[in-house]
Image 1 (cartoon, helix red, strand yellow):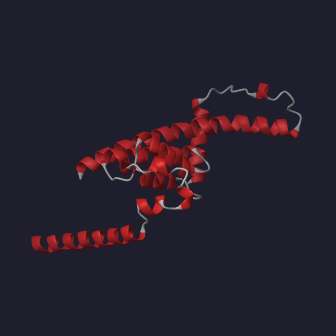
Image 2: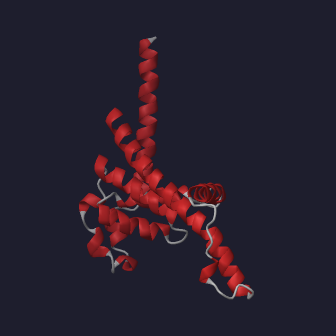
Image 3: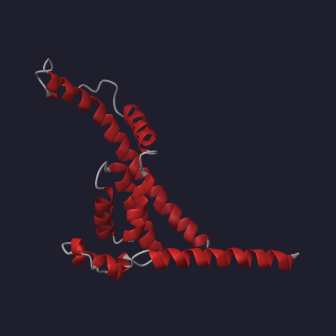
Length: 179
């Protein structure tokens, strides 16, 4: 019985190793990425080997930076996540991959939850009509609507991004210790 379990575990590990080997062969490395002409302006900032090494601290920081920027920034998430990862010395590829938490399927529920959180946190009598004195004009009305609804949304996104970054950082540390 034990030998059959050992063999099954060995086969699973071999399949996993083979799968990761295929992924690593098909994924461009640090040198290939930095050799691109598009990377010339940022190449000096990304040449540090610690930004590409898979150690516990770097991965945890990369996860935190990626989740934070992925939830907070509606556009150019990967760019901002990589920049944040460089600043906090996190793993750049992990940071870029973690921004994919927001995609066309996850954005509506995330933004709805963020809006609900922001509405609960902010005071009920949030009156920002003083920002636009001519509210009868369609642009003024549109800006008033955007400010009234955008403030709770951005507040909720900031809270979700901060909480998910902290949770991601802690999860990496906890799971890395277990294995």
